[in-house]
View 1 (cartoon, one colour):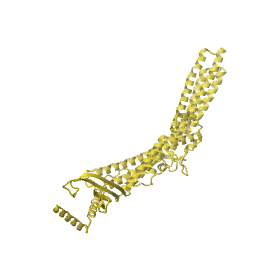
View 2 (cartoon, helix red, strand yellow):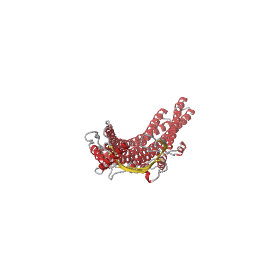
View 3 (cartoon, one colour):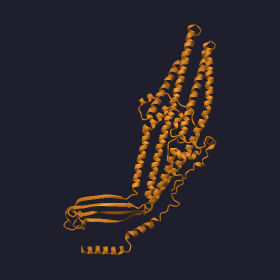
View 4 (cartoon, one colour):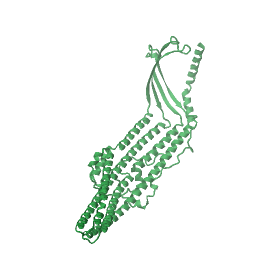
Length: 502
């Protein structure tokens, strides 16, 4: 035992004599830095994808002809162009009470909380630990009598301080990526809001169409009822046969069924609107007939592709996702380098409680803690390859979203321009069909023509009236789709003009 004690004392003396020259932890730190500096990523696991420049996309002559100077931007409440106060109220109620939008907002709160976790890694940590253990100590170890071979308390209480120096920026990149994902969640919530606003408007347009169809169906029923009354009078006067009466009466049940079918559609659309507002079906019963304006500003921003990058929520969300993926690559690269922490502790340690808080039981220490990956079986390089692939996926997703956004704008613009012409032609056709029906009706009432001519003229007038209503509804619907395609008026926060590629 005495020989062992002398050996330990000799070792302490040797260590102290050497530590006066160069502390051992300094040598370890220098060696770790030298080995860590050998990590190299050049030529391996490099991103293959590149962000598409929005200004490199050819918008075509059709889109260029619709751009405005100064640059046109949809207002935040773009649906007010329809000049319908009830629509304004329904959109406001939907954005305030829709559960899907609340869910998207809850996701923002979640990623904000996670960014706080990432932020905490950049600050020192202080932790209190205490342990009080009743145990029997060995007679053949370093525990002195009277504790050796007996039961007693082994007590320790310390405060532990640790601080990661983050020399390679791992924690900084993790925090930056977390903040980027907050922007992703925010843009996605704005995308949900824009989609909700557009959906309410488009359903409201369909409701307006159904009311017009109901008017046409009721007018058609009334016309056929009038024809039936005239035919019955003529039959009573001996001017027509029972077959003529049956022929005129046959379409009436079908016309009444059509009215019932349209009325059903109106009730269903009302239910949809009340559900989007987060309310029960009873709220839909108070929705009145829409009154929409056709005086809509069909214009586009001047620098369209760049405007999509800065205003359309799905494009902005994808661009922030690219930024976050780039930070993830930096985090994966930092894992190749040594991790250096500064640690310190202070507290009390004693056998038993008698001297636990005495000055002699005080313990304390400090020093660096260095960890360096030397052989990981390819784990770190594979991890870097995975996050680099994630970056490429994010870049290509952004490129695809940007191209699709421009396509949607072009599609809606083509549709609107075509519908503008269709409206003119359908109005002309509807006017001609009504004139033909009026002439056939006068001829039937005066006995100059038979009911077949009236029925044909009436059927054609019905077709043209329905076609006119559908074209007008498609025009109103296409405007809402165009506003969604250009990003609406929802405020978004675009990423920096030039993101830092990994």
